[in-house]
Length: 479
Picture 1 (tube, rainbow, N blue to C red):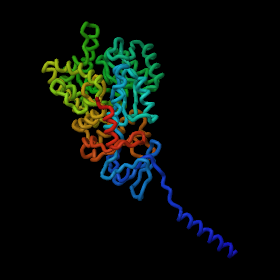
Picture 2: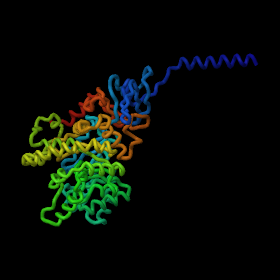
Picture 3: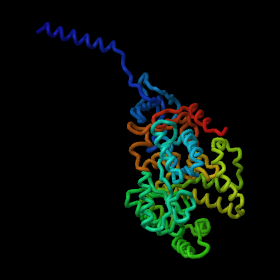
């Protein structure tokens, strides 16, 4: 028995000695970001000296950086840098027909190079191409942001934008929604160039019954409160929120409805001065509380408003980013620019005054609990609103309007993910989340403009250091 114990002891000692001599095998990650400060966009907390390990497009490890070494195919130095979730641009456009498909595709690079790892396409006429880009990028064929898309817009007969699904009757609305569901769109975008108030509200109701999200513009012949009560999930821009802030909203809406039977129906821009003059803090408070209660989001798009209001006075010919906008898309800028130059001085002054008023609404909505989504409205026909950079400028304007840097970051990360129903999958730096991240050389919570200081972007689990991003940009620069 004693001999048996000795043999067992010797065998165990030999086994342990063998284990000690065997080299430790480190897991090989796809990407490791070491010694980085994580910015928690949910709480605003900073977590210094962390390591983030990524494999197969997902974050698989987040912990204090206390190990001696990590094995990775791509190693990203996070020392002195700040890691945030990738930014979301919740209002972009891919449009212009078949002749502009290749030109639109170049904007994917601009989004990624500016830290935007997800975009929400708000309606156009190249849905098949957009869906193909999404599949190709998901398959790793080329780099670019994730895309959520509405497919074609829904509007009324004789719609302004080509490719729109024109509806008037409940049956036509049903067929339009059938076609969007066959395309497997992510939500429904409604436009207001020709749609009737009745068709607008019926579209929301039918979409809600099918479990489809709805967002969009709104004809001034209906009230925002009616749309919200039907189930509208988001309102794009602030023209429609602003009308609901009028103390005379019902009277103004009735005036618009009556004008529809005349040769000169009243539209949004004709009514804005009256809306401005009848602004009511009490009415604003009522609509904000309703939107918050029904979880109806607002997409302010402040930057495009500022840019378009300034077109008569600003020369964009020397804009640095103009060199990266395809000449075919640059040509689409001419229409708005020419129209702006023809505006009377009084109209220009009112536009500036209106944009100032719009900015004042943002912190009020935030305080009331209205979800704020950051969107640029970049794309063809929207003059000098450059993909990528315009979302950065939007965040700067949101802070200038009264949001904190953290709230602005949330508008461009977690709020977008919640709206699209994927908050459990992305927009946070945690194990199991999508590895869509941005590495900054300065703290965005101290100054939101630091989101421009990009050292690397990680998209779908692949790292693109600054040099790689510069190479991608050079590839789309006009020759």
